[in-house]
Image (tube, rainbow, N blue to C red; front, side, top):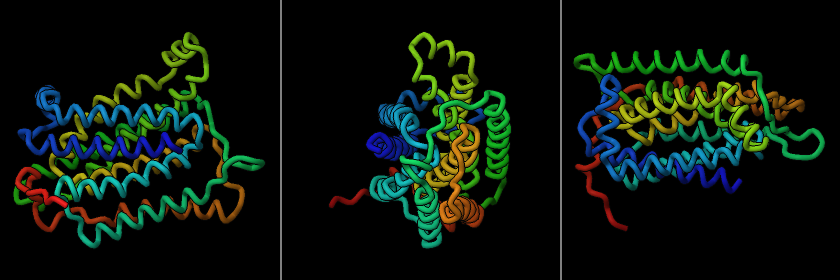
Length: 303
């Protein structure tokens, strides 16, 4: 639990730092990844944000070794509240009433998923350790393809003339799919850490997990930075987090053999929570009513 809460703080702080750094940089694009990487690594603020995110990934390893996948996602998503607060305070971002209701509904949906869990004792939720490599690839490869396709589609729409300012929902879903695959890969890596050092290294190299992490790390970095620069962190990160959590909770639970609840009430909470979160994502506004002001143009008020 402590590692999960620490991961929340690290993720929220890391995204906000990266967003502030990107606001002062020239426009970046996934079509020029080398230039994007050169710009961001030259920013100390961005380096600080990326180190915070990397530490968050490390905290995830500890979480996945001790909690069921669905339980971990429920705790991770609670960090959305901190993210929205930091975005309002440090980035000057404002959310509309409709967006606040949507974020509240997302938190309610994922709370339902958490309430469907049963820890410890007879009949408690089990922590899965291993999944067939073929099943992981069957789940992850289509998700990666869908994420890259959706992001490319959002980029094409963004280049149209006279377009309305986008909220970034499409970007968030696309990056969320990549991070969902990354989350499953982290879960897979954590399962190998129970072996000795030599066995862990050999087992990892024979598994798809390090290669999935490499792909999602490179593409996720480039895609997320371009999206963060164009859109509000207070909306794109919650969308991304929700997609990641749902993807990991649903497909990860099935892939790693963590059984669904056998009690009708708990099963209903988990299914309805998942359906509600997906429905909210589909109903969220796709366009801003007005362009957001650059972060550097806003004055941060002192308490």
